[in-house]
Image (cartoon, rainbow, N blue to C red; front, side, top):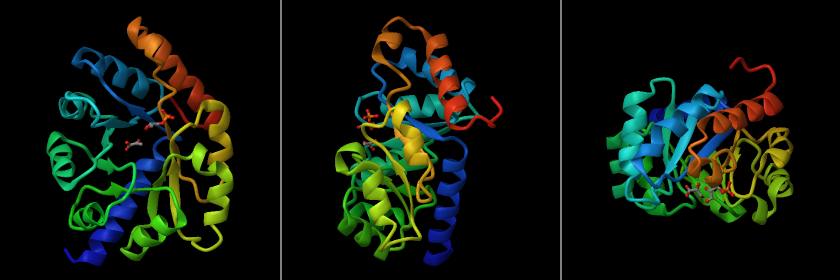
Amino acid sequence: MNNETLKQQNITEIDRICSLSPVIPVLTFNTLDEVLPIAEALVKGGLPVLEVTLRTDIALQAIKLIADSLPNAQVGAGTVLNPKQYDAACEAGATFIVTPGSTTELLEHALTHKVPLLPGIQTISELMHAYALGYKRFKFFPAEVSGGVNALKAFAGPIGDVRFCPTGGIRLETAADYLNLNNVMCVGGSWLTPQALINQQDWQAIQQIARDTVFQLRPHQNI
Ligand SMILES: O=C[C@H](O)COP(=O)(O)O
Ligand SMILES: CC(=O)C(=O)O
């Protein structure tokens, strides 16, 4: 497959994944026991797209567990910092890769890969750099402290044919403001899985947070 076809295919695949859900829960797992109950609660609550960060030792095992056990979930890897982690996450079963920022090494690596990258950008220069390489879909991170909704409105002036998944500091109360922008596909966040509920193993409450989120942000979605 030539490079241009692969680039287009990866944009189409990111669009497909990001259209499945208004919110991508960003998950950092500390123990393997909690992986499936949390993932199941979110999927049952109507949020099938999950980002598992590679911030803990068990992250790759968690991705594999979700990929093998929950066919209705789309599991991606976050906090991918280099090509080695990229390949390891794909090997574990990740169907998309998210990075907090962008390096040329990672951007070029992903252009040869069938598993698509949603690269992180924070500034217009980072956006221009990745855009020049052919990227059209981005994570905007850390969204709230980098200008939030107003920054995304400003980006739409000079570069109008790209779309974002803003993440970082977003909560249910602010998610709709982002989703109302034409250049936003979905948002990411960790608010769906409060540590206190995980400590209490209250998976039902996490499912309810997911349900409430879908109900408020995409009321017509069937759960
Ligand atoms: O590192 C940040 C997480 O990926 C998502 O941000 P958050 O905890 O502010 O929702
Ligand atoms: C920031 C984020 O979600 C990541 O580490 O990929």
